[in-house]
Image (cartoon, rainbow, N blue to C red; front, side, top):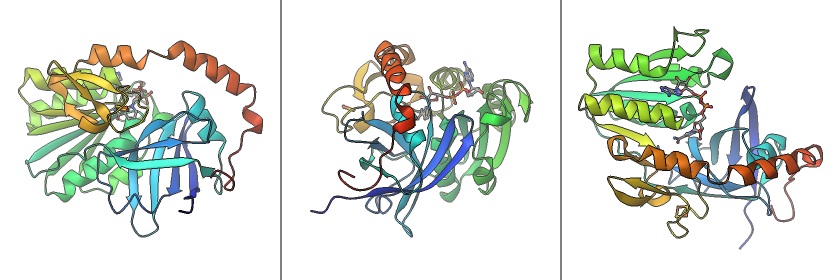
Length: 289
Ligand code: NAD
Ligand code: FES
């Protein structure tokens, strides 16, 4: 079988440390649904990282993903340009979001998690729900994808930590107001763990169902290696096959945070090593790609 070429067809810097790329992967869009993710490897020596699908187009056979430059793999992705190829893209993986017509749905996105929230909010709109999207960002510079979200038939409210756009404060302040004034039937949250934990607490106290999307470290993405294990309702779950979305009221967020930091010293060492060679890094389409 011929090797697939996962060519980068678009690259856009959307914040100082965040990029949107479109990648040709024609086998993925026909099967992809909101909430699912892919596991990518930039080159044959690279680690595997999961990235939630931001969009997928059957027409041109591309997927769109957003990444924040935090470690070696995302620093490698930052070096790649349109016309370069990823080594592999596996997916769609994970269970899709359970999208039903429930009435009023609040979608809460924080930071780079806004990219993963976008297709979920769109799917809830398309299912006939009354949708409110609440976005939280550090500042104007880090606020992403508002143009895409504004195109949805949904309400949009924004909070920034420094008040440069929308309300000053955390996105949870918008959520509190939405709960009191709008009385949602369901809340979905995607973003940093402290944000998802805060959303889960607020909704649990008020008896509102809440789903969160866990950003666990992953390796094989098939439920075999155990790397992405987490605890939900006292049971061990694998984010890659049982999730990535879970009932926020039942997630052990402390365990998630602990496992996310498990390799931080190795990641730091690897990042420093790569930084010394970053200027010469390329992965053109061709052998092995
Ligand atoms: P960030 O730290 O800039 O925070 C973004 C917003 O989240 C803040 O502006 C605020 O509104 C809200 N927030 C943060 N902490 C909060 C708290 N304690 N209480 C209430 N609200 C809070 O976000 P970032 O640096 O862009 O996010 C990076 C994180 O998001 C990474 O940890 C990444 O792994 C995670 N992420 C998760 C997913 C997912 O599927 N869950 C997807 C992409 C990224
Ligand atoms: Fe290996 Fe989920 S990534 S079990």
